[in-house]
Image 1 (cartoon, rainbow over the protein chains, first blue to last red):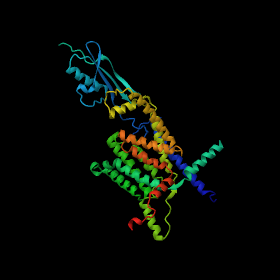
Image 2: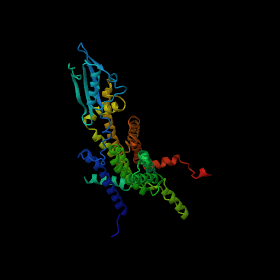
Image 3: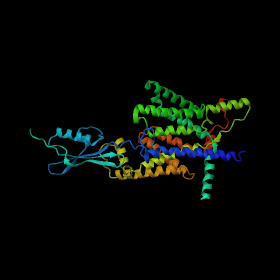
Image 4: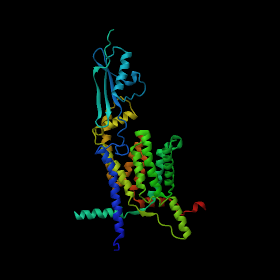
Length: 137
Length: 286
């Protein structure tokens, strides 16, 4: 039987191909973002989500003898230059080095670190003294 | 309901199934994507970095395919060849170098190559065109116009919209909505672990976060409609140039800006090129 409208049928075929490919483009991000499938070869289009969250917002304060608190700039703690602290434990190490160099200081550490989902997670709240009291031998 | 279906069918036929137009934008896209493959991986694919057999074969294949794609030698085949090779590069080099090698923008580039292979990307500005013109001259026949059915060209726009839409979906998390993600990016790339003391810093990051979400949503949708398309493309170009300047995004910005070409009316691009071309071709050699 001769084809009544070959141009129309071709057009329908192109539309079908278009819809199939357009649908296929949604499979990977749907699998990654909705079904939480993990595979390095499946793009999820979560642009820049893995970058830049390994940083902590660190504040160090010193409790002075009169009970007042003074902020201690990170650059003055011997770290030198721009200080980017990735983990709260790195901030602990920084403070401990200060404690060892200047025994008797009452330093308090506040640190909140980056998390891709919630944003900032408080890991040190500055409530207790970071320098352990020196125990006499 | 049936009237709605009929309207959808009409739109699909006119915008996809029977879409016919100039092939020049696809030719520009073909050359641009080939250059982006070389810009993204060229240096990593040279033999001195990949002395082992499989990576060396893949590297040579990708470089040759990208060169063939650029000049338009068996263009559609070259596009498929480049797509296959680039996919192989992602797999093999990704396994070798880990997640540092595999990025969203490299996936995006590879997918764009696969989609390009579905298009008549070699009808204009190509070795294919050159050999066809030689044959036509030899046979005394007129050269076929630079036109073809372009049903697959909007797939490149679907690709763009998909990336924008799912990027917005990923940003619905508290980290982004609260401005924290942008604060972290600022502190990582420009600041330090001391939170900026400027009182407007946090409100600015919150406002910027929501603006980015609104903009990406607008770009995902606005690029499809004639009235909003110029705004979408204009804002998108400014947005991606800003990203390129502010953050290490490699070839991502260039790729997105290049793909905007797929959203523009092909005949308008053709006319624009005509309007800036020499009206008497061949005069240069006289």
